[in-house]
Length: 470
Ligand SMILES: *Cc1c(COP(=O)(O)O)cnc(C)c1O
Image 1 (cartoon, protein in one colour):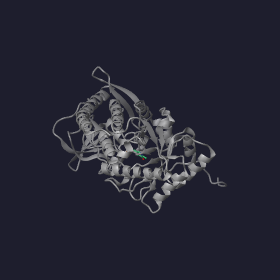
Image 2 (cartoon, helix red, strand yellow; image 1 turned 180 degrees about the vertical axis):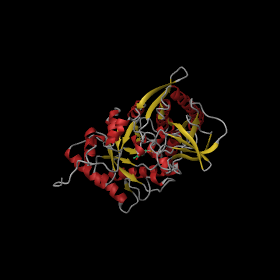
Image 3 (cartoon, helix red, strand yellow; image 1 turned 120 degrees about the vertical axis):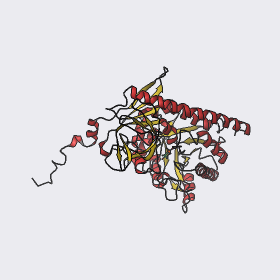
Image 4 (cartoon, helix red, strand yellow; image 1 turned 45 degrees about the vertical axis):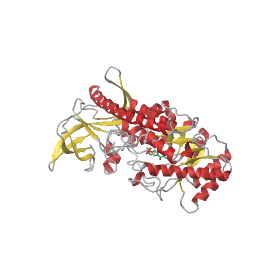
């Protein structure tokens, strides 16, 4: 534990460096928008593109590692496993891996992405509430860490462990049931959440303790109680309750059976300005004060942050195709809508997005703002990126940027209206005042859309006959 003097010094450094880091990120973003237009990544024939700030992603990975290094006893093993669902892109996983970050996967597809990125099994963690028998067998064969969600899954793991030994670290997910945050759909620790073993249900805690005592190979304990909309104090309580349970199990076992606590992810992101808050340093410090025993070196740690590592490093750019007016309100019709900002369009109150206006050359637009709607290309009235938003007047050819969309947004395509997946490019300053881009994912072509829509089976239905009929 660091002393008071160290903490004060740490605070001062954080405030200065975080502010500067945020300003530099905004400057890089403006440069990248201009360069994307100049270099033709965005134009009349490619009217939507996602951009990822490689420098920013590296900085966030480094900030996460430093935050936990500052509060853990020297030599404490800490695995930061990026929640792949937040940004399921192979080059992103490899970038994070190079920055010392592992992968938390929750489906066969996510595991395939992590393996394609070169993540080693010892830096991969499998969580999911619906793992099949085959998924479990593969994970145990590969030696990937698995957190069982429920008693039935644990019974499947029992059978696999009897048939072949595995070096997979194995744990159980518990739900401390501390209640909900401001967004119900992303609150994982409610009384009736579908995740993990509900600790406060009658008999559940005793069952959990017994499950560990019967299985010497069960060495991890997992919880994931945070998410967007959850206050940090509630997250810290979830971690504290999980730690208390680990202590109880080890006490009853008479040995340090649980050697690693997986505290999940879920640090909320500030979507209302360019300021990074809360920071990893703040959260790690809060946790180390709330649950000092967890950081003293007796337990290894696993974290599973997703949104907070990537959200602020993604920018979605869309051209304004038309600018019209309806009922006295200006409406900018753009190419970004429900297909790339699904949560925002369907639940705008919970997931508002900040927008920035750029002109046709990719320069920030200034001047008097007007209240307008920014609409997407999909054919339903609610397909709006923002309703009644004050922005400089948007004209055809202008560029609208949806900010903080690096997680759970443009990498999560929704195929409404058969709209194509946009291309995604990473960027870094090129050292000469401009910007270098690299393709992360190609824009989807029309052939690919036809193929994923049954193109290979065009006459499947017209040639299908009931047996015996002509
Ligand atoms: C979604 C998820 C995460 C990551 O959550 P973020 O809010 O993106 O940080 C981590 N662990 C589990 C088990 C999850 O389901």
